[in-house]
Length: 318
Image (cartoon, rainbow, N blue to C red):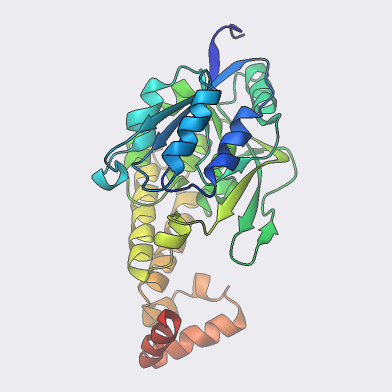
């Protein structure tokens, strides 16, 4: 068991120009009711808005909990892995928890529930949970994750990456996280997908059905607003995923070859879509046949009449 005088959990958070969301995020941290100590290590990546001022306000009010790092030069643009290179080396906790500055925790007992499970189940390395997705455009809310407590396996995550759980739900043993294999450090824009693969191939993952965090989709400066919509970047995204999956398959000595092969083929199909290579895409019957009738018709038209793709792009960009 842990010493009550020691910090047990280090919360890792990244923020950049998130003045509209960061208070909600910080409030989710400081409201946690625990029988152990925790710290919040948060990196502000040279924000040009009021985000640093808000962090200083909370740092002053909760000096034993909120421990920011204020950058004067944007580190992400320099290729720095902010969590791994800057924050985690400072972490005092036995466990790491994660939450981006534009997401937040909505259950005051979140950390206690997850730590209680991990402390009583030493054979498990990661505990995650259900998350509510909130789409800021249209204010749609949905819970796409299961409400059932269960163990997660590679089969649960390999086709969808970390979409089987959101990063704001992660609590992981630090010593396990520090042994991330090379394929999980490839970089690129694959987000948390490599971590999900690592967790389920080399550890035991417990999923809790309780909704304990909220993921905001479509925030300013977010991946879903600045990266995902563009075809060129989507192509890079799927190329990186394919590279990562092939490396993970090799790392695990092809123990899960059937699962990895299926995921690679699926992402190769997605890559054709992102490149708008519809002539090749419609030949991939395995995945094309699973599309809805209207989508199959549209893709056929794009394959037969390539000028329609340019017309569609022109209309979308206006």
